[in-house]
Length: 209
Figure 1 (spheres, rainbow, N blue to C red):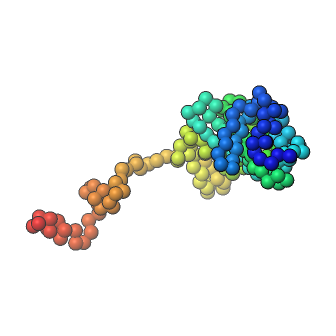
Figure 2: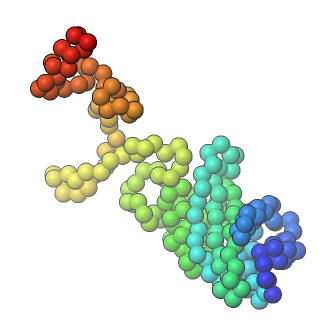
Figure 3: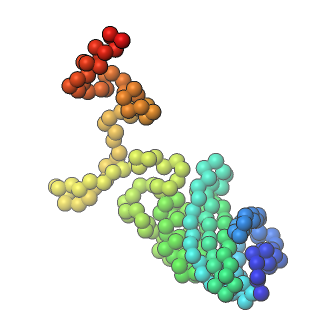
C-alpha cells in the first residue's frame, strides 16, 4: 500500500527505471518527469496497480517554455481516492512531435487534450477527435503560446452582405503612445493635453511665483 508519495515514486522507479527522467519534491507535492513515449504505460500502471489506484485524472494542462528545445510541457494531475494522494506527471515535446493520447486510459483526457491542442498546438497521437474546444474553429494560431501576439492574427466581424461572421487580418490604424503612469498630469505632454477652463490661471500663478 502506498502511504506516501515517496513510496509511489519508489514503486514507479522500480517498474519504469529508464522512463523516469526526473523528480521534484516540494512540500506535499511531487512532480515526476516521464519519457513521452511511455506516458500511456505509466498512467495505466498508476491507475490499475492495487497499491496505487490513481483512478482520477483531475486535469491536463500545457506550459510553454519558449527558450527550451522541447518548449512544451504537458502536465497530468492524478488523484488516488483510496490513499488520498495526489501526483503530477510531466512530459516534454516540441512543435513537430506528438504526445501519445491517454484518452483510452482516462476518458476525461478527451476534452483536456483538446484544450491543450487548442491553446498550445500540442498534437496528441491517437486522439479520436482532436479539434478546437475553446476558440472558434477558424481561429488562427494557439493563444497561450509565448510568441503569440497580444492582438492576435485575425479579428472577427459580422458581414451584412454575406450574412455571416468573417475574419480579417488585424490592423492597428493608431500608433502606440507612451504614457507616464506615475502622474496623470505631469506625465502628459503639452501637445496631448486638452485645455480646460481655468488652466490659464495656473499658468499665471507659475509666472508670478
